[in-house]
Length: 127
Image (tube, rainbow, N blue to C red; front, top):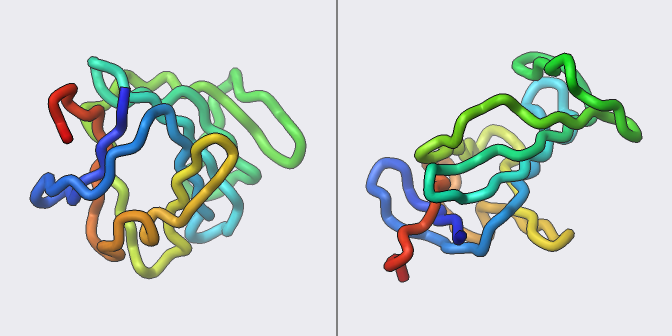
């Protein structure tokens, strides 16, 4: 199922991408890498795995987290979300959207730096 990326305030569609996808970014305080794998389902956006190279403010590991390389990975116990909001702040490094091992800055793909973005499953009839 495709994932739609829109302006949160207006729902204006900016980009439609085949799912699943990975969101990658740097922790804004501790500056370590975080990656989240998202899958669009009829029930909503499902976070299937998180990988983090460090621990810090706002990053709590569940008991089942596994150590790998320089970091941790785990499957969050989070129900599907109707949409996922991204702050898209101009004061932090920003998100990258990754598919098939290739990552591109989200701001370069959709523009609108500084505006809150929303990820959601695309309706089947969306163009």
